[in-house]
Length: 292
Ligand SMILES: CC(=O)CC(=O)SCCNC(=O)CCNC(=O)[C@H](O)C(C)(C)COP(=O)(O)OP(=O)(O)OC[C@H]1O[C@@H](n2cnc3c(N)ncnc32)[C@H](O)[C@@H]1OP(=O)(O)O
Ligand SMILES: NC(=O)C1=CN([C@@H]2O[C@H](COP(=O)(O)OP(=O)(O)OC[C@H]3O[C@@H](n4cnc5c(N)ncnc54)[C@H](OP(=O)(O)O)[C@@H]3O)[C@@H](O)[C@H]2O)C=CC1
Image 1 (tube, rainbow, N blue to C red):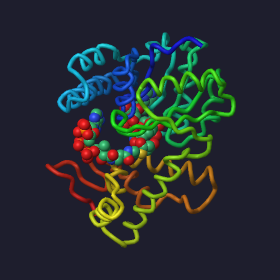
Image 2 (tube, protein in one colour):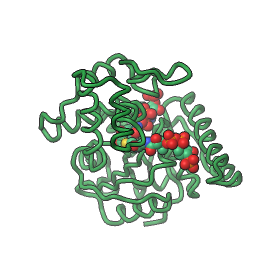
Image 3 (spheres, rainbow, N blue to C red):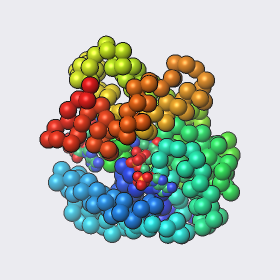
Image 4 (cartoon, rainbow, N blue to C red):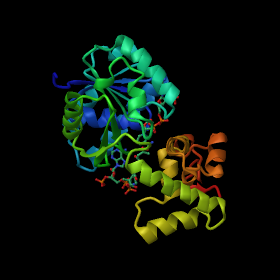
């Protein structure tokens, strides 16, 4: 298999931005695709801001910043991804959205190109089956924020071939990340463990055991977590948290994964956490204020 040089990223949300940023810093050419041109514009500004932050912290040079930005182009048409060697899908955590993307992508992508999904929870085997190349399909699950977190999980679908796995491993290693290999079961390793903990924190709030401040302080000071579980849920996105819990609940058919009704309520309200300015905290003022 030819070396990966050009990487497509589908979805310019927080994960797409982070993957584009780190891939470009590692020397790959990146094409960032999103349905909305406005989204792409603000994504480029966000990536620039995050690179600037690294320059200020002296973790990268001004030259590296400039070259990384120059390696990223954006496209609001899937045709822009036609020449990519690898395309990483990082749109919303909804299986029907991802399946539609893969259907449309396969029509424009070279047959030898690899497709990866950054899904947090959905079956790689099932997503692969919606493409014309299940053997060239793999899960590459980066962690948020991508420029900071050291890990990516690699998940093979039932049909993923060795050449695809090796190419994905080489790509993730070139991005400076450590790898954990996970079997293809709901939510893989990190989220199988992390999301039930977050869901339990939301039950703890729902049942009145503690308020937002107490629950987050308890886990930060009492268990040395860098963020409290409710702060982390807001950071991940409450829609994403709910989707992951639904995949665990349906996929493992065990009531212990039942999404907390309070999480459902927040998502139904459109209170999705930091990205919508309101979740377990309200981010519209100078500092975050608990909403319960
Ligand atoms: C849902 C899924 O599918 C899987 C997941 O990803 S689950 C989520 C996994 N992520 C976590 O659990 C994150 C937990 N939180 C943390 O580790 C930390 O709070 C944090 C790293 C996010 C921020 O740390 P902090 O100390 O509060 O903030 P801050 O001082 O601003 O940042 C720490 C460092 O990260 C850097 N940083 C933070 N965000 C950044 C970004 N987007 N881009 C580049 N650098 C960034 C900062 O520059 C800083 O660098 P230095 O250490 O060199 O100074
Ligand atoms: N948040 C996290 O901590 C992590 C998330 N993930 C996974 O990464 C993926 C993305 O998550 P995240 O970045 O947080 O989500 P965001 O909501 O921040 O971003 C999703 C982006 O995808 C765009 N999008 C929606 N539909 C399409 C489409 N059909 N084609 C192209 N782009 C589309 C959205 O546009 P618009 O807003 O206009 O709809 C948005 O820009 C999910 O699968 C998630 O599970 C993985 C690891 C960590």
